[in-house]
Length: 122
Image (cartoon, rainbow, N blue to C red; front, side):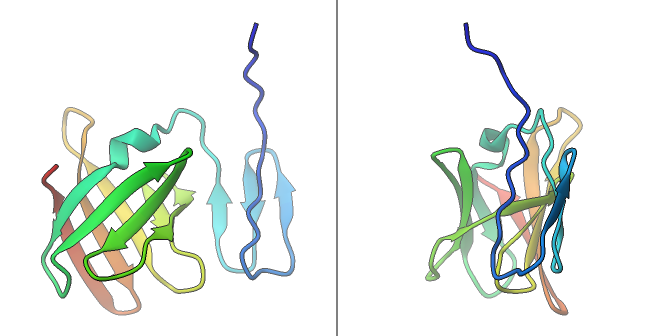
């Protein structure tokens, strides 16, 4: 019989002080909330971007989400809050949006003052 045990995992990425408790980890850069019930498969797909890059491809590898814009390297995404993820080592965040059916259909990349919208196409 397999029992599901809620475990709090803390990923330390260029952060010196980490305090963890319950389902949250607090770092000097981000508050990382580990939610149960999030299905990473919902985010996977190809998104057409309205800015510099043609596409953002979101993949799932060994339970971890990765983002790869056209012509760039693949980077792991870390869950920040609700439907928002961040890329360690820079100020970029990716927020996903769901339609009325609860399906992830859009994303918004924020990097400093730049905002890039994307729509899921596959």
